[in-house]
Length: 477
Image (cartoon, rainbow, N blue to C red; front, side, top):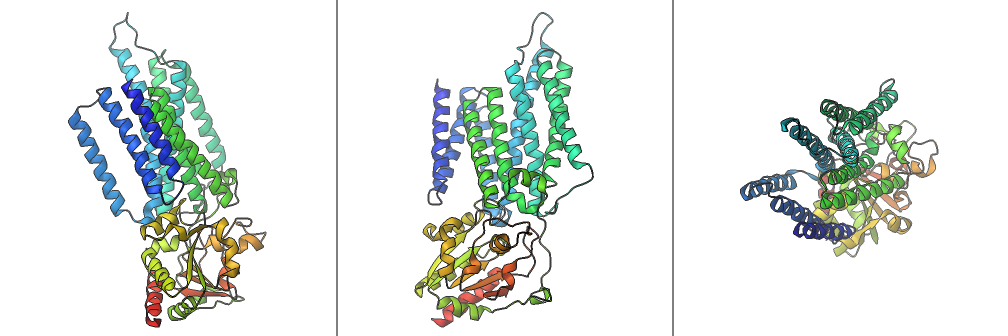
């Protein structure tokens, strides 16, 4: 009874925490509540089932908490997307290992009992949930680590494909389903067949996860991370049914549903179906060129600007909209951008931030980045809220964003990104783009914004550029 009450309290904390994560103002508190709910569930399970001695529980809390604290302090914001991918991978692996342990426990019990005694068999329902947990968990594990490799640059962001790849993927999926069926029908009957089939299912699922993610291009990685997050939740829920743990079922279902909803939102933000994301092979690594106007095509002209000109332009504007992108995270310029915004506000300039749903390398990347610099939440505006304001804006300051501000998404029907909702920065009176070069974004599509008559390119590291603008604004005071 006490354990069920603890699980009920955990479920309530999960739901309240998830609700509070809807707003940047309460997101930290929501995260703390959800984490607290999981802590309650884990401690209740360990103590009330007498699984571990108190000193082992304390040691585990200190070890896990210490690793988490180090990661929270040392991992940079640019590495946060791949860290999330790793978390998804370990979550899927943990779920699969728990399910496999259930099979190993049954096989062990069966081996040590005498001939007249029988080990408690694995029922058909439990066998199905074990198969699902292993299949989804292992796919999530290997797929997430491939996503980690693509996001971190270790594998490259370009799609990896070979002749007959889709046939091989379908074959591996078919094999996994066959192994799952063999396990389900042999569970509780033939130990060697049961163990070998579940082992083969785990290996096939690992291969399937790799085959599903390697052909996906870097531009779609944010969607893949969200989808794998959903998979990890589904694997946890299936494992909850395996070990009859209500807290795991509730938390896994919440994560699975939230991850899938986020996946749908991300697909809509990119004007792509989930099928296109999984089969399209769209996007790749950004070109490594570092030049400036010399990279422009012969028939295109680039208007360059300088920090002092940008300082004058923004200081005497009525409204400035800052558009952050992945380049802001790479340069770690969020604190300098906040300082510039404060200086402009002191001069009576209205400053707002425009956030695109897929800016960066994961959902909410820019929100978290700006929150780190204590940017006021009421200055952050989603794409739907602020797009209408660009036409009445004096200066749009684009800091490291690329694909999400490319007008080709509206005007070029032949472009791979045509139809993707973008921030309409090109409608501002003047656009200043801070970027190292004219190279395309993660989609690999050249940005038409760079060559428009109202665009000024400020080449260089975003942090250095904003620092120089800040100095010039101070000099004007």
